[in-house]
Length: 187
Image (cartoon, rainbow, N blue to C red; front, side, top):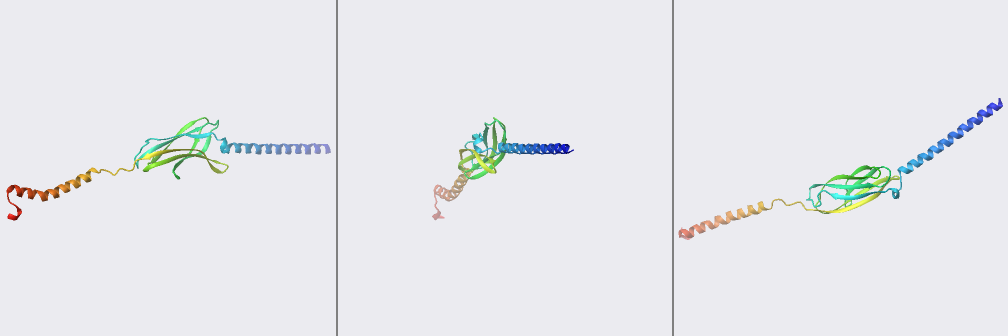
């Protein structure tokens, strides 16, 4: 009887030991999976390869498309990336993107052009170890024509017309009087 009790105690101890080893192994595998999800920035081989404008010389107020091409050189899909457009230090817009393994994808943004020479920067970032890390940057300048003043010829023609009417109303009586042979003094 004692032998059966020792055998069952030993079996229980053996089962408990196996369970503890299995739980420990599962914990280590879980940590490795988490480490894969949160790779350090040096291990991320993803970049912005192109930044283009639908109209390279827009007028102020014109809505243009800014296209940003992103390339993932890694063998795994990358999710939870943020692609932002900046004008100087001001964030214009941003998108949450994902990109498949060994893929290149173009993302389009709409932007209302602001007058002058503008520097537009595309910023690709990801959250790594709880912090937002910039992975890739690309900047391009764009010259935006200031908003046109409008129809300048109409006001000039209106001023010329007013000048002609006023000048004509003063000169025409003098010209008519000189042809008729009498002057204003004779009246």
